[in-house]
Amino acid sequence: MLDRSRFESQPFSERHSVLFNGTVALKEGQGLCYKRDYTSATELAADEIGYRDTQVELPDGTNNLWFAGVASRNYAADTSGLQRVEIFIPGSVCRVAIGADVTMATGIITCSAGAGDPGRFTYGGFAGKGSAIPLQTNASGNLFAEVSGSAVGTLDATGKIITAGAGDPSASVAVGDTVYGVARSATTVTRGAYTVSAVSATTITVSTAISSSGTPTINYYVVRGNPTCLAYLMDGEESGLQELLSPISGAVQSMVGGVTYIAGPYTPAGDATSTLANGTRFGELKAFHLLGTLTTNDYLVTVTGGEQLDGSTDLASMEFDAAGDVSMLVWGGLGGKWRLLTNTGTGLA
Image (cartoon, rainbow, N blue to C red; front, top):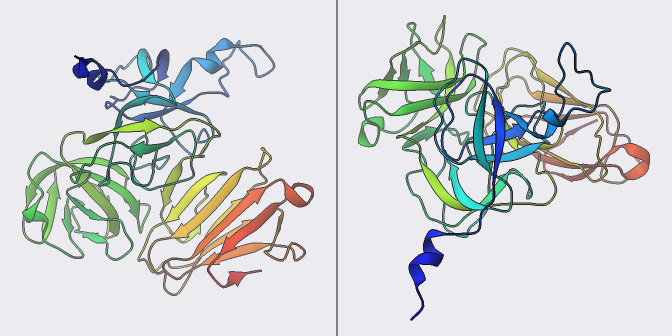
């Protein structure tokens, strides 16, 4: 008789030993990116340095095109700034850390390069390295969230109490859970992970202040422990990961490549602005997706070099203000420009 247990407990996976460049703790399934631009005082960009294929770091807007894999287990913080860790590389079936509910064999989830939850798989991005297909249903990917663009939380003057924009947090959130603050209406808010110390029907209190002044608003979600799901870690071309940006008045730079989600609903005091630099890889994809309405002002992207849908009109800028505005571009056609593939908004120039 077939020993089924052997196949159930040993899905295909491949592990690599790498060096984590960072002092923070890592969660099982948290995504990491290679530090391909590694240099030091004695090791220069022109030198042949194998470290560039063995050092990894948390994802951000500078390394989002160099996805390495996910941590194979939890790792405690190491103040030395460089510790040996083991990762599952793309092509593996393994656990990935999630911040969204997932359904078996449905859709994809993509590693976050955002400042609030780097390495956690939440929104969907492009297929390829850095994205995963869930092979397990988990309806507890987050317990309570205001990230979809329909509502935001408001912080009180202490910076510790979040008043929910909608819903009853006490129905699902408990003391000890973790709040990930992922987008903000003011720079006084520090995005990141915070521990819940109290909860009511309308508020969530955290133990450390999220904001240093005023009563700003935030997008956030709440998890218990480290929710994961078994998933196929996609291989192939780089997905470019995904990020959630805060449309604060002034410069709010997006990453090049991957999918940039723009948080809402907000009323920025002035336009939030970004410049989309030229791509570096033929066929590289870039998308912008506004989740919630922006009133009074917009998220304005200046395009260094681009063409509109007709293939002949220059594309100089894109403006996002209505919930659901989406633009998708590809690099390399038409003599090295961003070519607009899809646009649902009206603010093109």
